[in-house]
Length: 244
Ligand code: IPE
Ligand code: IPE
Ligand code: MG
Image 1 (cartoon, rainbow, N blue to C red):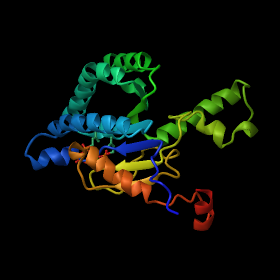
Image 2 (image 1 turned 135 degrees about the vertical axis):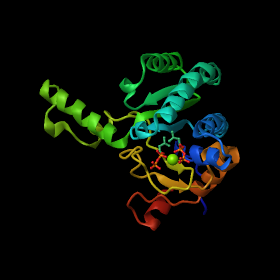
Image 3 (image 1 turned 45 degrees about the vertical axis):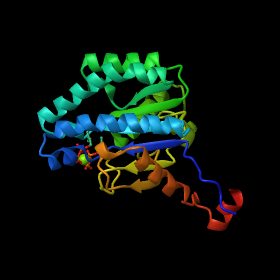
Image 4 (image 1 turned 90 degrees about the horizontal axis):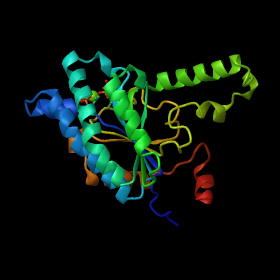
């Protein structure tokens, strides 16, 4: 018997290809980043409509600071303006907004808006939307290790208490199910230091579509592909089909 099409509980997206989208139009890269905002809105709406409870978007990596100053500046500007223009609508749609990453590196105005948006939407339950900013998977694992070491130094735990669940509880996205499906737009087949721990068993989906062109139909193509996957988690095919 074929299992009914599975809906992922958590979709994570590496939103890549804004720069190339703009360059193809002979426009500055920032134009592509602005166009990407529309794809963010479309994905959030599509996830809500399809009953996907958690969406995590990679917006700015810990490595993206190395880009030209004007591009980083344009991205910071865009984040600031998006926080001012989008939060009302997200809030009325019941979206709980959260930010993962090393937020301390951002300008105070940006940090304050992120914190305000998180607080304001904390009670919402339709969709949890995590935006990864100044995020790196290695940073995430390192900060969890640092927290465990401080707790051990303070006598609140002993090294033998550290197992996978205690470690995971100190990582970004703690308390949420790990991503079932990772989508990367823009044609590259790599993780680029996204959720290294949390993606251990995610199904990976790569598409040539550039992020500004990503829409509900593109999400549906990814979801259809996902529904055909057999997730075995180390077991044999027979074992996993018997459990389904
Ligand atoms: C993704 O698009 C957005 C960020 C990394 C901030 P890119 O800007 O990486 O676009 P390409 O890969 O250069 O086309
Ligand atoms: C990954 O895209 C980061 C984000 C989408 C925010 P990049 O464009 O930075 O990745 P690389 O440099 O091609 O690996
Ligand atoms: Mg890129």
